[in-house]
Image (cartoon, rainbow over all chains, first blue to last red; front, side, top):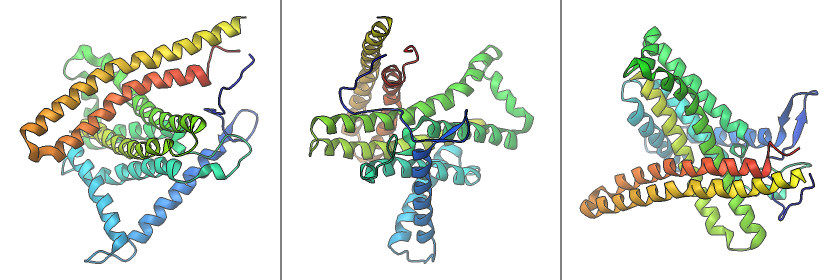
Length: 235
Length: 83
């Protein structure tokens, strides 16, 4: 088919790093997510390096973030179980927030790569799918660890004929988590790039700020839902 | 010939997908915001809590539109029916 583009916007073109004939990696996603992991780790390391009773500047920021994540975990998981799952919830939150903001705040357009372009790692559906599947694995694991074989009792509650729906729910939960994060980030970046191609100056700035806000809300939503799913299983 | 037909149908289908997906969540968000304003007017001291819950539920409602958007984007940029 003869294709033409009205504006130079492409979705789903990647920098392919080929292993062999059948498998390849998305290079730009790996590069940016490594940078995000490095930045978040450095921030946390510097913030918690020498803890003081009266916190300094960076330690204050880290404490605020910790309090936020802890409040998410406590409200969803209850005060007796939250500490087991706090590292998982915190990892999800910080990685999603870091990658969303990395896509919006760092001027990736300045760096040319042969194919595709550098953007938020959550712009790639594989990243969000991986996070969603990790959430699924975690709540299965949590259920087995805490309830043992009685975990399967969950599937025939409140009555037996809801069994198919309960099984389907196990598949729709990661699917909706996946599409929610991916769709929001792609929609945001697409809106910005369409507006940039129409009016390249000043007009897209409010939309960018809105996107920054929306992506932090998405990180909050993802971690809240992940802990809510875990909490549902272990209650 | 068939390809251009598929392309035209995909463009229309993506517009319809995102347009119809906007209707329900629009109504839902309006209702939620109205109730939140009512709640704040009745109990101004609970504003912070209401705002947090409202933003969270907005994000949930918005996800439904986003599903429509994902369908539209896959029809436009990753169409499985073209060649």
